[in-house]
Length: 130
Ligand SMILES: [Zn+2]
Image (tube, rainbow, N blue to C red; front, side, top):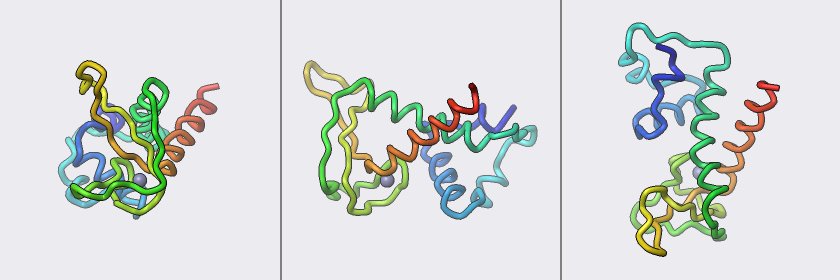
C-alpha cells in the first residue's frame, strides 16, 4: 500500500502528523513507527496528500455558501482544522457535509490563508497532471 492510499484525511491523528510534517519537515516519530510495514512512498506523495486534504476543503468551498469573518470565534477551544492553531486571522465559515437539517447546517471556521494554501496545492497538482 502507498502512503497516499493509507493516509486518511478524516483521521485527526493523520492530520496532526501531516501538520508536523508541514511545519517541521518530518513526520512525528510515533507516526512513522506505527506505519504498516508494507507502506511505500511514491513520487510526489506529499503533494498528493496535500491535494487530498485540499480537495475536501475546496469542495466544501465551492458547493456551500460561505461567510467570512475578520476574527475567529475562539470560544469552545476552536482550532483551525488545517493548521491546528487558533491564530487570530480572518476565517471562513464552511458548512460541514452531512449535517444539513432543513435549512440549517453546521459550519466550521477555517483560516482564509489556510484554505488558500490548500487551493494552491490543488493548482500545483493540476499543473503536474497537464
Ligand atoms: Zn489555519
